[in-house]
Length: 90
Length: 203
Image 1 (tube, helix red, strand yellow):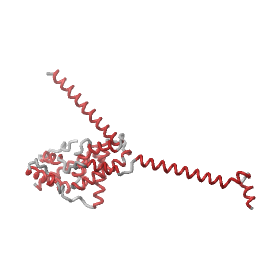
Image 2 (cartoon, one colour):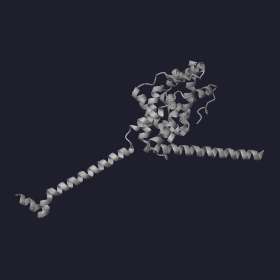
Image 3 (tube, one colour):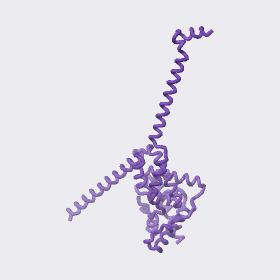
Image 4 (tube, chains in turn orange, red):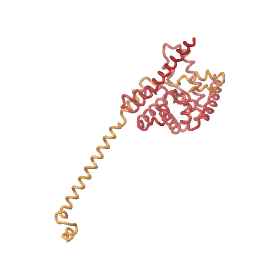
């Protein structure tokens, strides 16, 4: 893209030269500093790892609740229906 | 003579094809760098750091702010790298959309136009081999341009800064600014005329 395409002014060449000159330039260690900051970022794989751990934890909790429920209900299972167990409680 | 012209045209066409292939290969490599792990991403930072700095400088920020904003730009690129969709636009257009958003956020945060001098450490960094007078003149010219750029509106400055990004077409720049290509060209032309007048006022 040439910004001077639509320019017919004598100043345009000077302005082009001035604008083409980068006003500011990065220091030599710029990339290293950016990569250093990126190194401190939580990596995508790290986030996936955390997510997997969360999923496993959720699964274990669900299993524990299911086992606890089974323990709590074993008389019902042994004696038959919940009605019998409920009646037995009185 | 005709044979020579035909051969030359064929050679030119082949060279143009090779250049296009090289550009495509370069673009593909940078997209791969975007998708890659940090070591590969460094290649992308290396490739774009100068254009991003130049863009931010033309947007009117001083060297220190450009450094901070350029770092923020690449961090955002890293964080959102999986959101880049090559079917929706070039990597350059996507990256400069982020750079412009970072610049606009800084303006909103600061609540004013940037007014700091262009580069307070510029004279310290002048190369010993450079002719001192030429370097000082160059720096004065940069300061004049910087002051003139600061007088432009945000949109005009954006048009000028985006028009000078290599690899960014006028329609892409227009889309980035949220206007049509002809409106972008008109804005650019007007901004350049104003800029030329203001630069020459200071000379």
